[in-house]
Every structure is written in structure tokens, then in C-alpha cells.
Picture 1 (cartoon, one colour):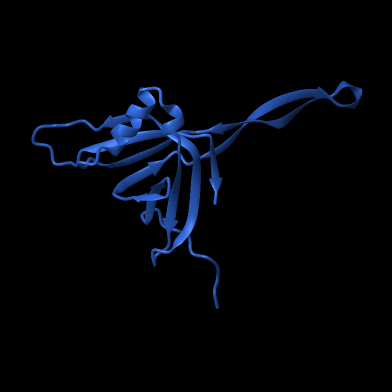
Picture 2 (cartoon, helix red, strand yellow):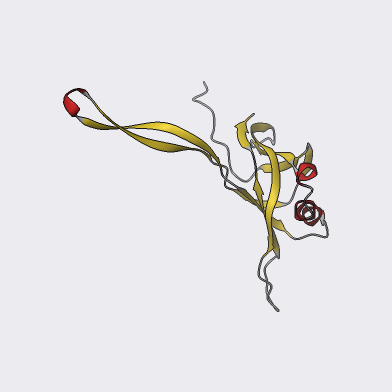
Amino acid sequence: MAIGDDALSSYAFHVEIDNVTLIQFKEVSGLKLEISVIEHQENKAKGIPINKPVPGVRKNNPVTLKRGITTDTGWWAWVKEVHDGKIDKARRNASIVLMDYDLTEKFRVNLLNCWPSALSISGLQAGGTEIAVEEVTLVHEGLELA
């Protein structure tokens, strides 16, 4: 008898951008849905003041992707589109896809009309023993659960 769904692990995931699956990511962060709060103050009967929070503007928090640097320069070309002012061409849809232990898709978050606002390379050190990492920050117009 099944007790309930198992929680998904955070290690089995991939990233899709315009329906192309990208691999070798070590970390995704910033998947956050947030709505600002407006503190509305009003008076009840007999002048009793109360605070009544109401929903404000939706916040589209940036998402950060990290992966080991490879010879693929796709991120740099994408950033160059934005840098050159071709923002309409640069907007793409992306998905973060979580899988279960059988590597079957179980959870998908879509980022709408995203584009890279920052791209950086980790610190480099002669004699170092770590993989060089590139980090890209994506801004988007909305996050939705598929």
C-alpha cells in the first residue's frame, strides 16, 4: 500500500532553453515566486485602526545557472545579443526539469521570455584543483509551474 509520493531529489535535473536540453549544470538557484505586500491601513468601527495586507506587484526574481566551463560559447553569444541591443532576438523560453529516481520527468518550471543579464567566470588559480565554473543570471517575465 502506497503511503504517498516520495519527495524529489535535487540532483536529477536538466535545463531546456527553447526546447533544447542543456546538460552539465551543477546548480540552479533563484527559482522563487514572490508577490510584494501592500500594507493597507484602515479604521474599523469606532475608529479602531487595523492593518490589512493586500497583494501587490508580482516579482520576477532572477535565476542563476552554474556549470563547468566547456568549449561551448553559446552563453557568450547569447549575452552578446543583449549587449548589442538585439533584446527581441535574445528573449527565449526556458525550463528547469526535475526527474525522479527512474529519470522520468516529474516537475517542470518554465521561465518566460528570459535573457541573460550577467555572465561570470569563477576565480582562476595557478595550481588549483577545482573546475572553472561559469555562472549566468537569467531575468524573465514570469515563472510558471507546467
